[in-house]
Length: 184
Image 1 (tube, rainbow, N blue to C red):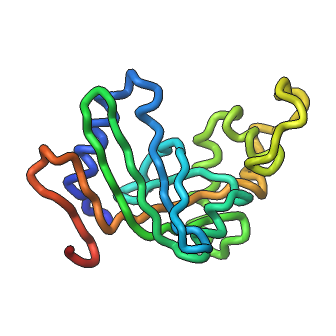
Image 2 (cartoon, rainbow, N blue to C red):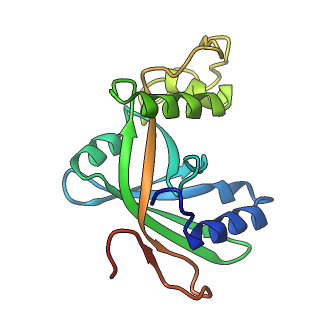
């Protein structure tokens, strides 16, 4: 969507701000299409927007099923529900995944910036076992897993960039949807 800010972005930012006292307001659901053609959904943490754009940054582990699903079908939909204001946003678009093997230096810089914007505790999850597998110890401490906070992204860290092409804001808003490539 380029550098022009879409009208829904400010509405979403306002909803995030007015619900910020609720920890769960930074969580959204991301639905993808599984390799078997069935929907797959999970909860993720909002990390922000790409500078000067309406594109969402999403941190994830490249060992998760969503990476294979996005390679198979690069489209996804995000859904937020804000419990205090009763607002729901549905945002769909194409997802670009950026791992350490990406040949584009600008994208690698985005990935690194997203890595360093995350807390050390958040970064430690990428050093653990594959997602979905049990931890060997529930009491695994930071001392057991060494992470130099000055070192860039580990191999398991992946940045997803969702470029919205359809947004459905709360029903009390004047417009029903915004599209960048087609209308519906």
